[in-house]
Amino acid sequence: MLIKELQLKGWRSYSEEGISLKNLNKINLLIGPNNIGKSNLLKYLLSLRTIFPEGNDSWEEKDMSFFRINEEDRWLYNTQTVEFKVKLEGLPEHSFINRNQDEVKLQVSHNLKGKNSEFSMIEPTHLNEIKATIFWRHFVSNHIRFIGDVRGFFYDTAGNLDVHIDGKKILEYLLKKVDGEEDWIRNYEDKMSKWLKDILLEEQLVFEFIPDTHHPDFSITIIRGVEKEQIKLRPRQLGTGVAHLVLILTTLHACSHRKINIFLEEPEMNLHPHSVNTLTRIFKEDFPNHRFFIFTHSNVWLDQIDKEYSVYNFFKKEDGSTNCLNCTESRDYYPIFENLGIKPSQLLLSNFNIWIEGPSDRIYLNQWIKEYSKGSLIEGKHYSFIMYGGTNLSHYDLVFDNVINILSTGYNAAIICDSDLSKKRDTIKERVQKLKDRIAEKELEDYVMLWITEGREIENYIVKELFEQIFRTEFGKSYFKYKNKRVNLYFVEEGIGEVFEANFSYDDFFVKIYQFDKNEVRTQFKDYIKSEYDFENIISDLEKKRQGVLKDISKVEIAKAIVSKWNVTPNNMIYDLNQRMVQLVNKIEIANR
Image (tube, rainbow, N blue to C red):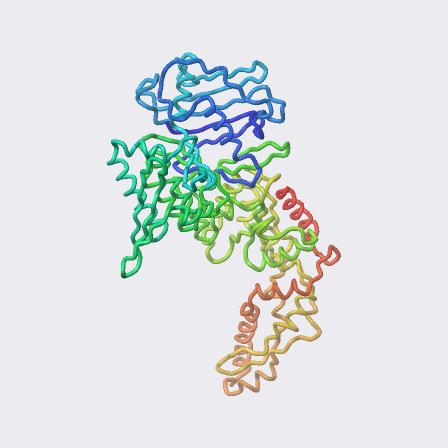
């Protein structure tokens, strides 16, 4: 029986509103910061195992209502009831359910006041409490497996490897298989040899179970080199990661004949990203009966997201309770972002995402955040940038529609857009207005900061004198070529006399600082000038060349030069920059509490 959806309320950090996991898939990733409450789900299921031990296949009637939970396990010691609901699919033939029934919905309520538990079946409703409890027992005992990290391994006093998996010693389990089930053991060894060979990138590898009654163990023989040298090792000699792989794969193979819900805590521990990728493929291809619930902090799992994945992002609400957002709907949009160089892990693992149009925006914002937070906020730790602009953005509206869908499943973000105002247009572009409307439609204003620049673009927040200074000292352009001749450029020492207004284009405005001498041009190109009309045409061509001078200079390099010389204070902020930075830094700080 596979879990199709579940809901848990009133348990530990889960309030009376609780958490809900729906649209479960082949691989389900549970993500979120440390100590956020992800593992409380696991701890609840483990508490059920205390009354429903593993491997109980009996459908015998027995009253289990005496099950108790500890009072300290309830939400803030306030709730009187802990409630767990689960919808199951893929039902076993030998059950109380009609064979035409595709799924069932179970519920258990633990009443702290009455000190009892009621196991029931919500759909269908024809089972009495005792039979419903038996169904519960069969589900918990036979269709849930827990695989911890490598700490599931330990060594006895003789130094032999012993493994506990979900309360069962796997070595003892394998010893029983040896007696009369040689074919099963041979198949197991062949499978393990293939899996480990692929994961460890070995050309030849042989895995064996050593059925010593007193000291059972595993061995791995690696065959390398032209001489086919054999290196025989025990898993512990190959490192913690290999021992962990043996633990995981042996457990999965031992229950591969059943529909099992597999709960794994950080299976990526001690594994190389290639090993995690290969392990994922093995999960999908070789264990069709299993549904995986993976508690992880790893970007490697997230960056493999496809149609067989669901993602659940756990976060803490203002009252301290744990909630989770179902990111499944957004999964379909990840390929679009992959084309823009954005990985799913960037969207889901960062505490705060800042969506920007280009790399120069990142340089300015990093400097401003540093100044306004007094250096306490650090990129990569407290916030991350995601770039949505550039020539890749051929379907701008489509991408922003999908950005909204992403934001709906993971709050704590800011989107920074150039208004692109100009002398010909005094209102924001249609695509930016659409984004603003979509945020309002999804009621995301309280979570997502939309910053539309008051000026044309982010460069309009920079004071004119600073631009003139860095162009004079660091980006002096001395000439360009025209008709194979060198046309000299001269820097306007007194600066540009005009005001750098909000709707001016940065490129078009500051290129005025570079000028050429018309008299010098007339002398240089006298062979091409037969009339004043020819001269005016040459001047027109040179003006077009001059207009492109700044486009030849990297905006990133200009931004680096600007921030190196700008002592950012509220006094030298223009337009709404001070107000916006206070707002942005405040949101980042809240997201990191």
